[in-house]
Amino acid sequence: MKQKALFYISGFVIAVVVLVAIAAPLIAPQDPYQVFEGQLMVAPLSGAGVNGAPTFILGSDDLGRDLLSRLIYGAQNSLMIGALSTLFSLLIGGLLGLVCGYWGGSVDFVIMRLMDLLLSIPSTLLAILVVAILGPSLTNTIIAVGVVSLPFFVRVTRAQVMNEKVKDYVQASRTMGGGLVHVLSWTLFPNVWPPLLVQATLSVSDGILNAAALGFLGLGAQPPTPEWGVMLSDGRSFLESAWWLVTLPGICLLATVLCLNLFGDGLRDLLDPKARKAR
Amino acid sequence: MKIWLIKRLGLFLITAIGMSILSFLVLRLVPGDPVQLLIGERGAAPEIYAKLRQNLGLDRPLLEQYFLFVKNFLSGDLGISIVSQRPVWQEFMDRFPATLELSAFSLLWSLPLGLCLGILAAFKNGTWLDTSTMSISLVGYSMPIFWWGLILIMIFSVRLGWTPVSGRIALMYDPATVTGFYLIDTLISGEGFRSALVHLILPAFVLGTIPLATVSRITRSSLIEVLGEEYIKALKARGFSSKYILFVHALRNAFIPILTTIGVLVGSLLTGAILTETLFSWPGIGRWFVQSVTSRDYPVVQSGILLLGLMITFINLIVDSLYGVVNPRLRAR
Image (cartoon, chains in turn purple, green):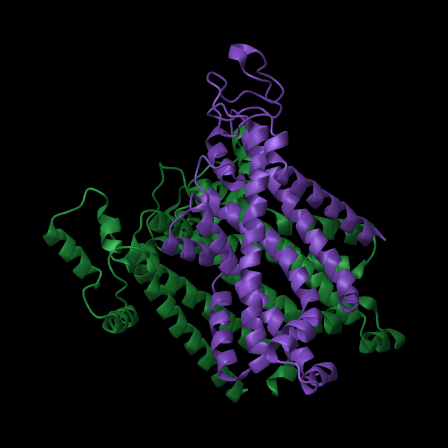
């Protein structure tokens, strides 16, 4: 029962974050890039009136920008990175996994050794490696983070396909004259996707975390882009004077990642009752 | 066991070759001309350009470049750092003890604690103790550790002033290098031990957070699974004490997934240190690596990735071979 409650709560929080991200231009009180002169590091809920500056609900940063607006647009960026990188690895990884699982043989061997190679390099290092090649930017962050989660999708899809392809209904579909595309997309795919969905949820949270880490190291999104990792890195110099600059972006990051992980766990329990006992 | 070992070694070799190709390609896959990128927008005289190109070995055919790279690597020549003009190997060895000391210290507290918490949670499955341990572990698992470190610095270094904000030791001390571990070196030289220790506490705490969360989680889940097995019930029925069952039978059988996790953790610690070291200005290989990527110090990036990758793969190989020690059933295969 408690598990269910957590699942719904985390789902609700994610829905809110997604809504905020989509509606960012409507609900953000200020332009996230607009600099208010003479309003540097204003504490939350103060700074009204001077020089026509607005009230900074969550304070302003070291350049006089509205923190709340930057956090809202940060949600947009973080979710976009998480979603696009997952889409990247889901499409490519899913396809590779399908090929590996369905045909096997030497293609399978080569692709799987390549994936083992990617898996043996720890995620942060691998992401940095990709950035070292492509150069730091928001787009390249998406690719780097996508590459990191690629092997997991290949593995999950491959295992699932290998499990399913020997079953009678696949045989039947082939016997009835189903072409390759038909068998793969209409017969196999509907039975392969549930674990992929779980993997995707967890991959979004990993992606957001990895992207923020890259941003923090100065190798991801570049300032002045409002991205949570970049904002944390910027706020580092003001630990003493402006606590809100480091506290708030981190809380947003933690809450989003935590809820995505909880949601993924809940989803797995829902889709795969066998796993329920083990954890 | 022998065949199994040969198989593992073969896989290790394949991975190593793959890694050498991957790290070799880093420099070659950079869009545009890496030499031009190094020189910058202002450009340089053609002689300097040609010399730099030659130094990086980029003037030869690709295949020859690769074999030369592997040959040099195996003979210990990892190239010269462009930024410091010192051999990459020397730069690496200067920094490696710092990372090792930090990693070892963070495992020293997080592994035993994680194991204990996991065992306790599995044993008291369903009680408030279990729930709270697992909630903390879940939060720790999702924690962006660079933020966690910032918060701890804000509280303990800035507000309370208990620990220093960054660095490895106070500037006034410069312990003679004996082992490279400051904790030991300062004890030998007789001064600065306290300084080295307080500098180490916070980074080690931050770096150990994720291992703590992961280990306690996996210990609990694999122990709960084992405790539900028939033979545990049989032991209970025969009247053995629950402590005996736990420590002599259950734990040993639950240990394989735990060991795997620890192996992965040790590998990722070496690079998890990237964030922690950057945050605390800890002079280890993680921070060095990030700086090299930022300053496009390609020889360092190229050899550094290969060196780290090989070390991590090797650690995993050792962990794999430990399975047989923990679980005799695997030895027979």
